Length: 506
Image (cartoon, rainbow, N blue to C red; front, side):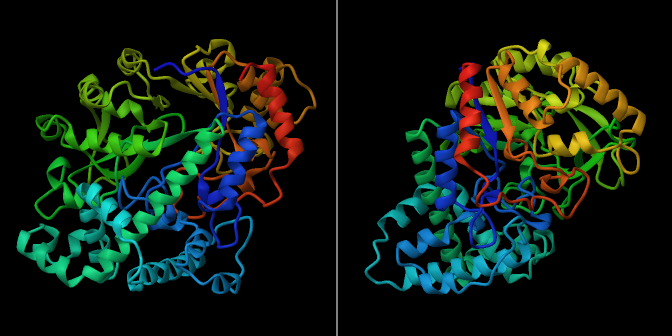
């Protein structure tokens, strides 16, 4: 699917300003849409909006379809009478430039539960919308709500450590647990109702202002998730439900031992025998939330790196063939042309690119990687861009442009000091600049490029350093915490971006 020429900003909603410890779908989200429209941007790219678990990563979630209740606006719930606004104003203060997940979770979950209790205690409340939501989403919602209620009832341990009859989903056990946990299940369903209601209102506002949403679909799901517990037959698991084979990527320029992700791999033969129904429904759900979706690790659909679950690194894995075009043909047969952006970074073979081109999915180019030793570097230089491409200054996995430029190499960096000197010299020569702010040099380059779509992380627009980095791959803590300051989105900044977008026909 070809996109018209346009641009956007990458900002996960948790990074929005706000008074309750973490960004959400409240007024600051609407203000951000206003800023995008004023700046001439037509896209807002977000990371997965699903409920996060250990490590707070939006790429390791308890469900691939459910929403993260931490993104629900408490102010909006107060406007509807489900919370006392005075209690929100009396809340403890939170850091303004970082998410303290522990404090935010404790405060928001307590308030969210109060709102649910108020909803169910109000005998005059109109339940028709809620009932309609539950009925229309029963295919995933019933399993998710029971999974989360069971997880809470068992102290948060992974589902393989629950009583065997429950982990194996024996019908009698599920019926008993559903009745026993009925109140908790109702609360979980209400929070999903509130999440999707608020998100669709925000998305409608964005559409009315000419802004579309790019969402994100990770190829793999977390083992400790409702997806795996409710669909064991689709994953490579042993009789106890533990993974036998896990996902990763092989050794490369960035890692001598590869990356061991640990997600359970799919049993593609079983999935194919169902017409890939689980994947069809996953895409159907995503396209109800987003206008476009980026597929993380697109190459894994053509061939994936299989690692024994007992291995400590990914270096001894092996390539296995994935479903390839058969999967996307099955999805398109039901859903039509797919507005997909293929994350085609890493070990990309001609077969991967042939599959991407067969369906017309745009790939990605990361300008930060264009000037150093990255094997894909030449393809990331703007003179090699094609039109059907999404060009980024960087992504959530990169350092900010300013942080990357100021990093002197050595130490824990994969770049030596000599690498950095050469990289800077080539970047200056290629981009033709001397002392201009490096973030604006790269922003101008991607906006001016041939690529139909250009996306810039908000941290790069703001010229922030490594302190604003969203994620450092391979680390388990300290990520996903950055938040924008309330005064960051100024009229002058919007005007500067608007003129650039206008100059380059975006």
